[in-house]
Image 1 (tube, rainbow, N blue to C red):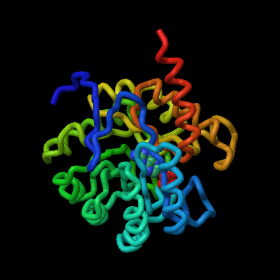
Image 2 (cartoon, protein in one colour):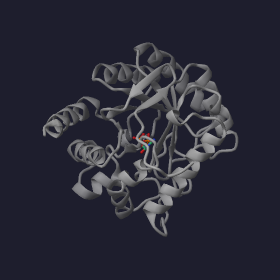
Image 3 (cartoon, rainbow, N blue to C red):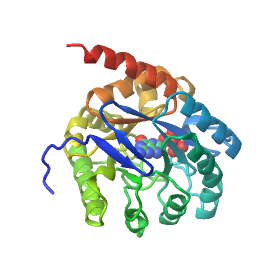
Image 4 (cartoon, helix red, strand yellow):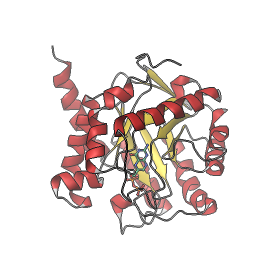
Amino acid sequence: MSEACRTAVALACGRFRLALDRPLVMGVINVTPDSFSERGKTASANEAIERARRLAGEGADILDIGAESTRPGAAPVSVAIELARLVPVLTAALELGLPVSVDTRRPEVMRAVLAAGADMINDVAGFRAPGAIEAVAGSAAALCAMHMRGEPATMQDGPVYRDVVRDVRDFLFARANALYAAGVARDRIVLDPGIGFGKTLEDNLRLLRAIERLAALGYPVLVGVSRKSMIGQLTGRGVEDRLAGSLGAALAAVARGARIVRVHDVAQTRDALAVWQAVGAQP
Ligand code: HH2
C-alpha cells in the first residue's frame, strides 16, 4: 500500500456508515472507579447508562465505553471484571440508535463485545496483543488503532523518541497495514496518535501540529485530548476545570485534519465545532 494521500470519506462502523464530511464527536463513558478524568467518582453501570443516554441526547456521533482505566500508572483489571463492567452498559447503549465503541486492549473482551453487537473497537495498544487482530478482523466493526509507548503503568517514565511524529506515523502505518493484511477493509480503520500516552507535553504538541501528516496515510485520524494533563500543563487547571482548554484543543485538532474527537463534554464540543465550521464554511 502506498502512502498516497487518499481522503477517507466514510467510516464503516458496524451497523452504521458514518460520513466524514464533518468532524465527528465521540463521547467518553468510563465504567471505572479510577478514571483519570473523573478520579474519585465511582461510575456504576447505572450511572454509565444514564451518561450514555445524556451524551446521545447531546448529539454524540459515537459512544466509547471503557472499563479499564488507562491513566498513567493505572493497574490492569481482569478480563472477567472488565466484561462484567462493560456488558450491561454496552447492551443498554446499543439501544440508543448510534454507534457504540468499546475501549479495550484484550482479545477476549473484543470477541465478547463484538458478539454482543459493538460497532467499533478502540484499542489504545493498536491491536498489538497476540490474537487481537484475529479477534476483530472478521467482524464489521470500525477499528481504532492508537499509538502508545510501553504500557499504561510505565508509559510516562521518560519517553524518548528519535522523531516523535515519524515514529508515531510509522507505527500507525504499520498497524493499519497489519489490519489490512488480515482482511480488514480500509474504510473500517481509524488511526490515533495517542495524546498523553508515553509522551511529553512537547511530543503531544508536535503530534497535534502534524495531524495532517498522519491523515495523509489515508485513514481518518481520531484525537483524544479532552481533560488530559497536557491541558493542565498549558492552563494550570485541575481536571475538573479543563473544559475551555479541551475545547481549544479539539478545535485545533480538527483544524489540522482530525476527523473524530474523543471528548467528555459532548454538548460543548458540538457547539464549539458548529461555530468554527460556520465561520470556516464561508469563502
Ligand atoms: N485516551 C484515553 C482512553 N482511551 N482512546 C483513544 N482512541 N484515544 C485516546 O486519546 C484515549 C483513548 C484516556 O482518557 P480517559 O478515557 O478519559 O481516561 P481513562 O482511560 O483513565 O478512563
